[in-house]
Amino acid sequence: MKYIIKLNFTIFFFLSIFVNIAYSKSLKVVVFGDSLIAGYGLLKEDGFVNQLQNKVNYSKINLKLINSGVSGETSTGLYNRFKWVLEEEYDAVIVSIGANDALRGIDPKTTYKNLENILIHLKKNKIPTMLIGMKAPSNLGKEYVNEFNAIYPTLSKKYNVIFFPFFLKDVALEPTLNQTDMIHPNKKGVVKIIENIFPYFLRFSKSLLN
Image (cartoon, rainbow, N blue to C red; front, side, top):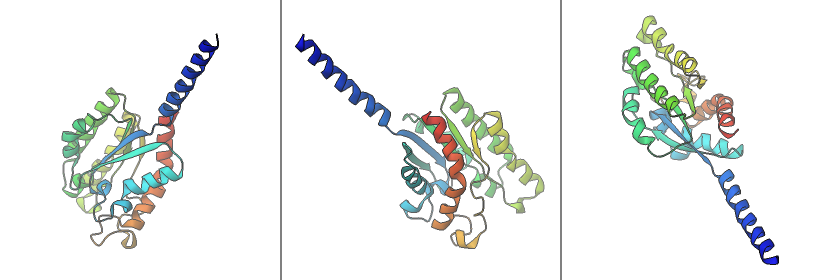
C-alpha cells in the first residue's frame, strides 16, 4: 500500500513538472517584413523586433519574436518565401510588407493579391495573424495613393485579423526620428513606432495566450 501511494505521488510530481513546462513554454511569433523589420542601418538591439521583444519581456508576456525581415523585399518576394519559412512551426505571424512596393510604384493590384494569398494561407492553416499597414508616398499621385492605401484596411476586415494601419505613424518624414535617408527610422523612431503599435500588439498577444 505504501509503495502504491509513493508511486502515485511520484507520478503526480513528474506530471506537474511536465504541465508547468508546457504552460511556461514561450509561443513563437515570426515577424515578416522588409528593411523596416530587418533593422536596416541599426544595431541589432535597436531594431524593431528586438525593441519590441524587450517591451514584451518587460510586460511579462510569454512570447518569443523571430525576425524574418529581408531588406529590399516586396510583397512578391514575401509571397515567394513565406511558406518555406513556415515549415518551421510558429504559433502566430505578424506581416508588415509593402513599403518597397509603393516606393517602386508596383501596381497596387499586385500588392493586394500577394497579401491576400498570404492571408488566405494563414487563415486556412489556422495561424493567428496581425497585419501592419503601409501608406504610399503622396508624390505617386492621388489615384495610386488611394488604391494602395486601401489595401490593408480592406484585407484586414475581409480576413478578420488584428490590424495596425500604418507602421511609420508619427515617424515618416520626421528628421529627428529617421536616418539620413529619411526612409528608415533611427533608434528613437523605432521607440515611437513600438509605442504606437504596442496597444494593438497587446490585443494580439492576449488572443494567443487566452
